Figure 1: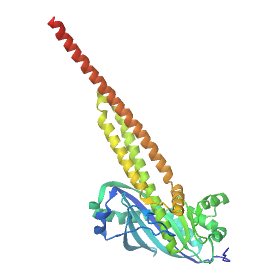
Figure 2 (figure 1 turned 30 degrees about the vertical axis):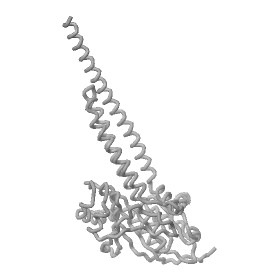
Figure 3 (figure 1 turned 180 degrees about the horizontal axis):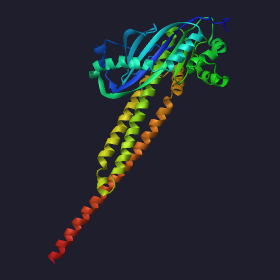
Figure 4 (figure 1 turned 90 degrees about the vertical axis):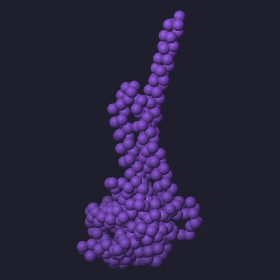
Length: 363
């Protein structure tokens, strides 16, 4: 096994801050490109892959001016526009120094709302000028924030060496801690580690990830992490939308008791059905945005990332609420059909009574 006696105290790398916003139902990338002059950002994967591996509709990438903080750090900045209504700001800062200083920076930044406030202003300014390309823009936005710590790989220092020598420091970065973690917590974090080559490593956490790779090799991993976070944001939106619609549906049922009220349930049921179809369509578009057919490593990396970030949990919540909304829709339609049936039966009875009256008068 290739081995290096010890990693240098001052290493090279970068810190990336990803902040995503769910701004609308859909972004027309065709209409967007002329407005910003952006280019498609299809990822180049770590190893050779079939042509059908990648985004169904690659996000449009817009480079913007570097953002400089009051403390002097300067972040290279790009904005990514996804066709399913998500806009992401990616800030990248070159780093050179020891583990301890990076851990202090990570702890400070991950516990502060600073980057969310900074990127919100940046994205809001652009959205105001891009409304022709947005479909059903939202008044309020959900957001997701994620941190990536990238250490440039050394040719003679393997991922196993790195985990052995600096597993504690990696786990501190991912947890945003400066204090030494317990062995159980450290091991739990490092279980979410994966490699493709001996000299690359990805460790994924719910709020941050650590990459040990070359500059080129890290790019597809960053895109997969970005995509997983955008999916989480979408499912959070669907969860809130369905929660609101179910609440309104229950209130609708409580306020409409009796025969006449049942007759007026069809509009409420139709609205609920329209929301279900909308969520199903948007969910399918989100799930199908990125394909990994034929690339098993990228698929495993995505599943690991989605699991740690919480995509699966919110997707399960959405599916459960869609089932509940479907049952509620069936119940409302059943109530409407019962009232309609009762009304039709009543009309038949009235007609029969009228015919009987005329029949007896004829006699």
